[in-house]
Image 1 (spheres, rainbow, N blue to C red):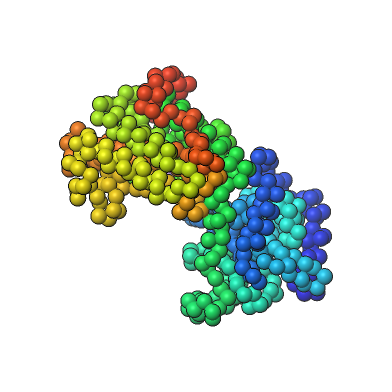
Image 2: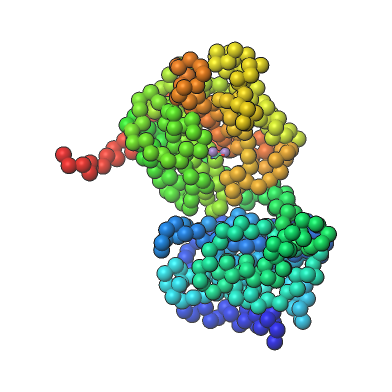
Length: 496
Ligand code: GLY
Ligand code: MN
Ligand code: MN
């Protein structure tokens, strides 16, 4: 019996044997993406693939934190999007055309981890190939070691589409781990320095490491109803975190404590992860765009605190930033800068509709910021050379872009030219004035970013993150409310 047939027989016999022993699968919430969603996505990808091609996807590597401890596993977003599989050491093959091997026909195959009673005792039940058939609804599923023996001839395809390897996968010594699966694939397709050198000449090789990302962008950039409902949930959770922190905030709290409050709210609503490391920066720390140390032990009365955090709910992440006065009241200068950023965000929002470009939205925000900073006296004119940071080509106080897709990645895949209905994007203008900036000292140490998540609709856009106030007056009003955390006072660990 050849390898394919042996494995098919095994799949057909599976089911029963693993129902009767081993670890029970963990109880999962029932509002994950449906299997139909993943099946439909695979079909849509197949439609977009070139003639006589195969697309090959690998699961994300397990990342080691130190010694015996790994980071929490997070699936590769493309792999998750196409399968719903949340375990490591797996390969997915999608064929443009039906493949016929003896009596079997298939146009997709998945290879997943073998069962291992001892490992499952520690880490919980594995899906197994029978689970891939039963739960993920693949007609044919195999185990990792089968991939190594799998006698597919990749040279018969006009194109073998895959993401090029980053060479950062550890050999874990487990049978058919990702390291082995990649090595087996490389051997099968004759990948290597020579093969990739040949690939530089498109006609000389069928290996294509460029096109797949374009296809995935075209799919993932436009969200389905199911995806939008998970994004709404992630955004609601994130904005609830912002609301609760606004009520609980007091001078003297630490940046980590504030981070912990947001993340506690995320967990309270069953969000599995943060979509990216939480950014909580008071005063000057907020001027560091991706400040994630969050070390300041006691935030000071009179400071602004910038909080950029996103809950990840069943794979989908929000990306929401609020900047608030630690003591509940903006100073005159803080309010002037805050309101300018708000106005810039509103200008971006007004420009945000199908047919407009990402550049249009950025330009609308930058115009408000540039003109506003002149009006406030931080620059003499919008023509002032010093306004532009030569490294970014942007206003030195507004050094970043203002929009990106969100979804399974916080900076999600998608087309970054024209806005289309059912894209979900951020609009996130900011002004950051670090200590020592060439302007009046009264502005120093003011960081403001306002970041919200928007669904592009037929006519314009819908603000998804409106649960957390954005206007300076609304923030001040909410900060006056009491918090359930006002009485959450822990004993000191210092000797009195
Ligand atoms: N939180 C990262 C960003 O706003 O892009
Ligand atoms: Mn963002
Ligand atoms: Mn953000």
